[in-house]
Length: 234
Image 1 (tube, helix red, strand yellow):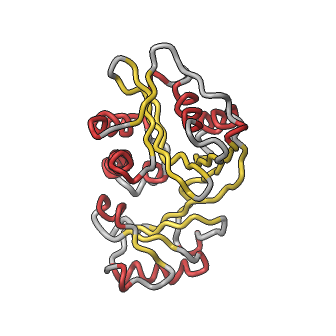
Image 2: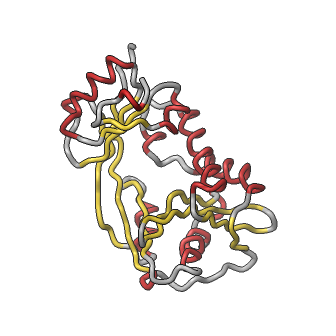
């Protein structure tokens, strides 16, 4: 089934489809959840995702996570400050393999890893590809923190209107709690004063919630992420 033949309440998700081995779609209209499931069963769709506060369980969807959106004005953030011995720079093509490895090592709290119906190997591959694509140009900027040639963390940033969005951020396990994450976020202020910064994180990730609140971010929204997948016995 290709995007041209999808009903208008579904949108094809080509990126996820490539890693899950079959069609993946996003449900745009939650009230069409039952219709979407019927369409999926008829056409071999492997995953339908929807982000809404409506309850889709009656249609066979499973609640995967609660996504919390935070926002801060640039003026709310602490001033950009460096860490002794830590270099802040923009990523280049030569950083791709190290960033892929870092993404796989630490980015475990996301909707793909949380869903038991999605193999961890596929979820890992998507995280790795996500940061690679960001460095290759999908993101407007990928900020790196490093020490003596070792990458300690990255922050992939995209622009949406007057806001900068933290699209994907990671800090190496051994560098967590040392100020690297704080430095990666405050580095976004360089050359972009007056903008807002937005980020989403999982409600179950209490460390992440506390981190953004400590930087002056305020919660602006919460939504459930729902997944439908075929019965395991297919």
